[in-house]
Length: 123
Image 1 (cartoon, rainbow, N blue to C red):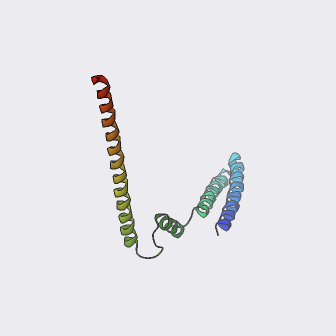
Image 2 (cartoon, one colour):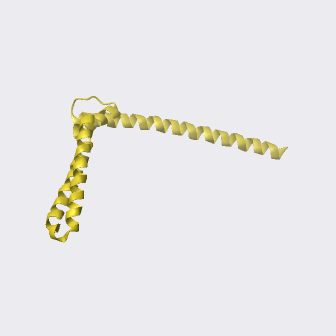
Image 3 (spheres, helix red, strand yellow):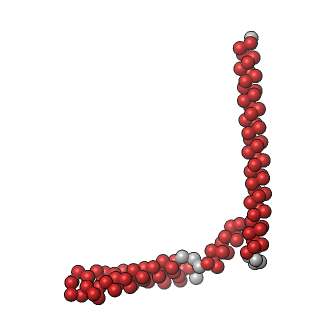
């Protein structure tokens, strides 16, 4: 499906390019300027439509987010938010524990270094 949408977007962009070039030629000739300006707007609108074809739709984005968070693909949004919050809290606690262990290890090594240094100067 993505390939078809990509090909459709490419065709729309090609058509938009032709329309914009034609509009630019019409705008150069002052007599046809009233035709060139609206045609330029149509060409720019076609570019926007091509971009909309390339951007994934909302259900695809929602499915990707749920898959990335490891949530089930069905159920209410409130339940999804609640489960994601629990997972975030759990990850935060694990990270906090690792950080405190690392800080404790660093403090121990500093104390050991001070003791060694004190022993060197007392001898």
